[in-house]
Length: 151
Image 1 (tube, one colour):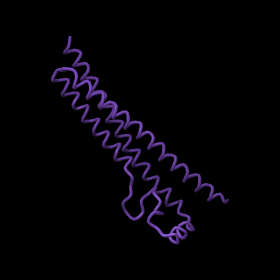
Image 2 (image 1 turned 180 degrees about the vertical axis):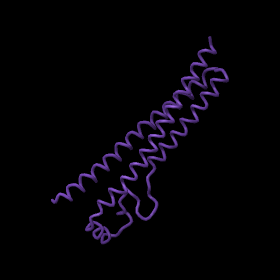
Image 3 (image 1 turned 135 degrees about the vertical axis):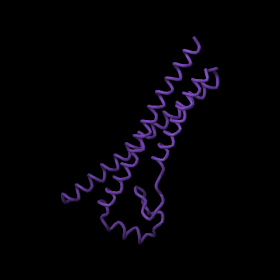
């Protein structure tokens, strides 16, 4: 195996691993946001809160919903277009087309495409984390208002 083959194989594996890490982080954050929304619904529907707490908490919920939307967009498969990245086209190809495709070394193109996909997913994940943090601040403020209103 030549140095180029080793480097391409290593880079290809690294990009795929980065995509997997980003998807795992996205899944964990999506589960966290879902649990927060469920907890908020439980508290807000069982307790009488001041109007200000509902307003501030509602803004926090809106940010959590926006975060969930970004996370779902980040994990949505890209099956459109002529060559979806990260998804083999083998299901749409004949045996001869598969054999012909596998004779070409397309790792460099795959590395470029998968890298762009990883960056897109990472940016959506980062924005979702930022929205979740902002929502957390608003929910803490709403809790303080609720406790202050109860005293």
